[in-house]
Length: 359
Image (spheres, rainbow, N blue to C red):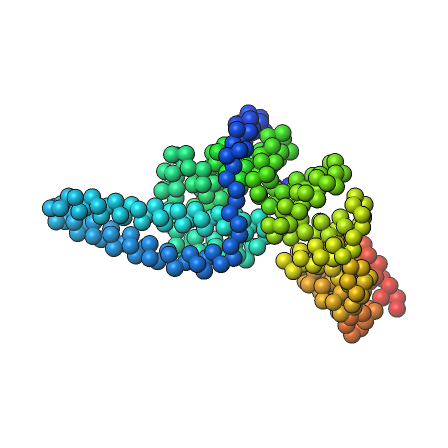
């Protein structure tokens, strides 16, 4: 799995190791990640203009009161209190938006994550100061929110150094998403980084859980450990974990082979857009493992994975065109997809192109 790291921080691994023990005390206080709500923006969007209108109305009323030389100081104080409450409510909503954005990103729902980011840029452009004040007061959610805003360059100039600083502040208080991101601040394979990812996984971060499951397979060959962590990630909707669970049951190397279970996991991941799972579903349909053999379904799933750029799927799709399996034979289409796969260095694609040239 590709390792993520922030290389521009100028933060030594020793610094991360030095602060690592502080995270142990935060384990029991870890705040679980909010579940992804695909209707969140639709439900919350109506609150934003109301809050902005309320803030604007009250700010104008404050100005009118000030121009009246504060003839009614008590009324002015109450008005300012209500204005502050509205601004705090807007900041609370901003934090909730970023929490949903984080979960959508962790589950690779990138279209939804981008929609939330666009909403944030439009409706929360002036929240940095208030969030920073909260962070200075020890608010972990505010610190984690600022970390994400600086990491992604949303309503603030992108800064990995600032992102890392805010993430570490929140991680010390057990914030789950912050623990995961802070683990990339320095050497991601250091003892401290691994400990932070462990805490993030235990706190419910789906990508951290998947990474833990992969670690169990890669380093320990521990099927029970892998299935437990991958299962937790899959239950939250992490397609990569579903795909790997399907592969584990399909190969039968660490657990008894179970074609039906393999197919079910692969299909769930494929429907979420995981290209490797889509290709595997195509192969299962082609061979009749876990589901009745169906050339048309195999072709459909190969095509989806091929269009997503997966080289092995492009070769499988080309074979379908060559053999007329699940579709009409189409030599030109086969050559096109083999060329796409060859550009990615897939050796089988080059071999098939040579074969086609000779026949």
